[in-house]
Structure formats: C-alpha cells, structure tokens
Amino acid sequence: MNADFILKVENLSKHFGGVKAVDNVSFKLTDGEFLGIIGPNGAGKTTLLNLITGFLKPDTGKVYYRRKNITGMQPHRICELGMARTLQMVRPFYNLPAFKNIIIPLCSPRALKYSGSKYGERDDIALDYLEEVGFERDTSVPYKPAGILPHGYVKRLELARALAMQPELLVLDELFSGMSMSEVASTMFIIERLRAKGITIIMVEHRIKELIRVADRLLLLNFGKKILEGTPKEVVNSKEAIEAYLGASEEVEQQ
Amino acid sequence: MSKQKTREFRRERIDRGIHVRSNDIFALSSWREIAYLALPRVLPMAALLIMPLILELAGNEYWAKVMVILAIMGIMAMSWDLLRMTGMFSLGQGLFFGLGSYVAASLNHYFQLPIYITIPIGTLGGAILSTVLLLGTLKLRGIYFAMITLAFPLLLIRAIQATNFLGGTEGVRAASFPNYWTIAYLAMFALLICFFGLRRLMNSDWGLVARAIGQDDIAVMASGINVMWRKIQVLFLASGIAAFAGTLMTHFLMYAGLSNFALEYSILPVASVVIGGSGNFAGAILGSSLLTLATEALRALGSLRIALYSLLMVLFALLVREGIFPYLQRRYHQFERRVSVD
Image 1 (tube, one colour):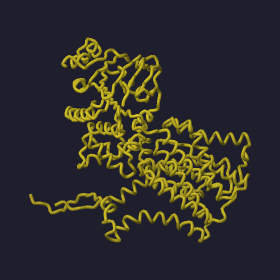
Image 2: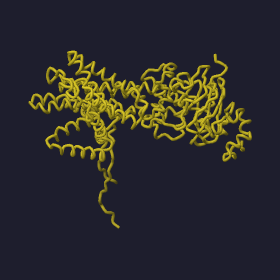
Image 3: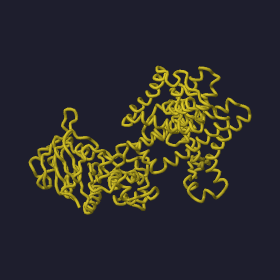
Image 4: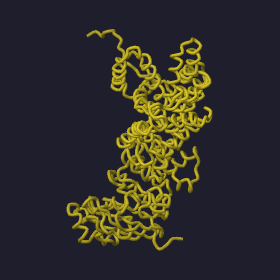
C-alpha cells in the first residue's frame, strides 16, 4: 500500500538570525520503522521536528510524506494526512477534566473521518484513548482536572492527545523528560505496543538507554547537523557520539 | 486541675451538595430543593422581563429607556466575553457596534428599508465587515491584537469625519421602533436568547475547542485543528452579536453617528466582565447591568460621577477579583456554621 518511504526529509535547513538551528539534514523513514533522534541540548532536535510537522517553515529543503510534498504546509493539514506529534512542553488544558482534553483532537478532521464520532459519543472515545495510555478507567483519574495530575500522567495525556488523531506517523518530542523511572517503564510498554500495531515512530529522547531498546535506527544531531545515522549500537558506541555529548559521555559509555 | 466546662466551637464549611441536588432526582424531591435550584435562575430573568413593563406603566420613561440600554450593553458584554474565551482580547467592541449601527441606519436612510430588514442585514453586514477588517490581525495574540482592535474604531471615526462619508459628523438618521414595547422586549429577549444560546454553545465540543484555543493555541494546533478558521468563526459570531446590539441602539436612538464607534462601547464590555466575572456569561450580564445602572444613578452628581464610577471599578477589581458573579455563586452554594467540639 505504501511507497518506499513514509517520510523523506531532504536538505532541510533553518536559521534563527545567525544561528543555524538545523543545517542540511536529510533522512528517510520506511513504514513501521522506529527512528530515534539524539543529540545534546541545543542540537536542533525539536527544531527539526517543528520543521517536519509544519510548526516552522524551513528556509531550504523539502519534506515529503508518502511522496506528497508537505514543506511549509499548515500543521493541521499535516495532521490530517496522518502525522501527529506530542509537544515537548506539555500544555494540558488545566481547568478541563483530563478526558475532555482528548475531545479537542477528536474534533479534528482526521479524527472525525476515522472515528466518525458525534457530540456526546466523544466522551466515551476519549476515555478509551486514555485507557490506552494507562489512565485507569474505573478510577477518578480521567475525570480530574488536567492541572492537578502528576507530571507522568500529564505526559501520557499528551501522548493520548496525539493518538486520538489516529496517526500513521507519530512524532514524540522528549516524552520521557521529567518522568520517574517507573513512569518511563510503563510508558515504554505503551510505546512498544504502538509499535507492534505498525505505527511509524520518530522519537526525540535524552534517555538513550530506553531509546536503544526500541529504536531501529538512531540519528545523531549536533549543532543542527546530522553527524551520524545507523543502528543504535553503532551510533551509541561511535567516537562522534561520545564527542557530541562530552559532559554526558559517561552515560553513553555505560551502554 | 478541674476541667473547665466551656463548650468550644469550630467553624464547619458545608457544601450544600450542589452536584447531588442538581444532577439527581433529589432536585425534585421537595419544593425547597426546586426553589434552591430554580430561584437564582428564574428571579433575574423575571426581573429583566418585568422591569420594562413596570417602569413604563409607572410612567417612568427615563428609567424605562435605561432598561433598553441595559439589555443592549449586556449583549455587548457577552460578545466581548465570547472573544476573550477564545483568546482574542478585544478593545474594539465599538468597531462591531458602530459597523452594525451604520449599516442598519444607512439601509434605512438611503434605501428606505424597513426596520425588520435593516436589523438582520445590519447584523450580518456588521459581522462580515468586522471579520474582514480584522482578518489580518487574527495571527496576533494578546496585547497586539488588543491594540489593533482599539485602533480600528478610532480610525473609522477620523475617516468618516475627514471624508464626510455617511453624513460625516452629522451621522445618519434612522427610523425608530413603532413603540417602546417593541424595542424593550426585542432587546430583553435577545439578551436572554444570546445568554442561553452562548452558554449552550460554549458547553458543546465546538465551544470546548474554542475555549482551548483561548488557553493555548499551539496545543490545539498540534491536535490537528485549523485554529485560524475556528478563530474566524468565533470572531464572526461575536462581531455579529455586537453588531446586532448596534442595530438595536441605532433604531432606538433613531440615529447612527460617530459616537457609535466611541471608546465607551469598547471599554464598557471589558469593565463589565472584569466586575461581573468572566467565563460564565451571567457575570457579563450582571457586570454590565450594574455599570449601566450605576452610570445612570450617578448622573445627578455631574462630573464627580466619573470619579465615583472609577473608584467603584477599582474597588471591585481589587476586592472581588474573581468577579461578583462567581463570588455570589460560591457563597450561595457554600456556607459555614458553628458546631460544638466535643
């Protein structure tokens, strides 16, 4: 059904003033693949995701989604094609109960096309999605205001928000940041399940230990440039990775 | 040491179980329960509907007219609250109001169209013109949007003054309503329809998305929703409501002039929601009613009125920050009693 790739990024560049946030990055992603993007702080990982998902317009370069040129397209149009993302800075709608947060993506054209839900049915569907990311349905957790949920729940709420759009390509921006070890473990389980369903995933992450467990390929970014691309083992043990991280090199060596 | 025989008391807060009372069959269990739920809703509505009747029959024409202005300003305040909920902090309600009134008055004066045609067309035309004028500013957020909306009505005042277009400083004459009852009850029912309609709308999923845009448009964008299109819809609705208020005012005062773009109409809705409490259209109506009544009641004081009026606003903004309506609502559902500690 699919073309030879689901996402193709060609020579993507973005400058902020004199700073090259993303510099001539290219990669391809086949259907069902799991790509991890790593790099030290300020390497341009989030900017790269913003360029792919339409939140920023690239200076040069092209992004193709299933052979369709989506460069500079509006975020909601890209979502409609089947690419959903989570935001690094989670921003739940604090006053709303957690499950009402999921109503918003359920009102998007893509969700309407796939779940065909009407006003009134959506609450149930929203609870289903929350259950999928580990909100216990029979407890009061899904009904609590999103603002008072623990951080780990808020992060998973963000994941559910992206899942509600029935993505074919899921872009996760530092989903694990700020999570406790046990929360990371339970979220890993959810991600592995998503992967088994055949969803293609791009994941930007600082927790490399968890990332190499699930990723098929890793992409190492530094100063906006693609330094290295390869299997997790290759990338993590490379001289370049250790150099890029420097301060964090200990953690890398442990792998 | 002998145990002293004094009873101690502590204050206990009682939640009157509003959830149980309103969601359950319990709400219908006694007249007292029904009254507890219904009276705070029915009494203000009844007051709004009866006041014009009483005042007009009592021959108090001045205060009867104030009731019409009260209803019109209530509609304006709700329109502003709707925009604010969607994250558009407008300081230009006067633009919508003025455009609506000018469209209605022009159609009436130049084309001799009757009132029942000029009001709908004025509403629609005002909404379309306002939306088109502000289309380019929708990308702006917060203070930038506020500044531009503030500038638009002032710009139109100067433009009309300079070009003498649409009567220039003279304004445009418009036909009046056949009698007091028509305008009074048209305005009052419009107020109530707007109120219940908007509340229903904002509690629907469409309203949920609109409110979410007000909190964080990036997250809504990441949810695959066309934020710009939603904002246009809300702007169209809100400006239509304010333009409708403008058409009513035009035919009520039999005139559309530069004063319809005045700062007063831009600021009063903001002040109303600040005083009354936002997020719940009842607060907007309460605030605008209080302000309209205070303005008229203090008119006898001359220019001191403005000082008192400002002082009142400052006091409310400082002391009842959540707004009068949320405060009253909270006090109504919760009260404290003294219980002995044994």
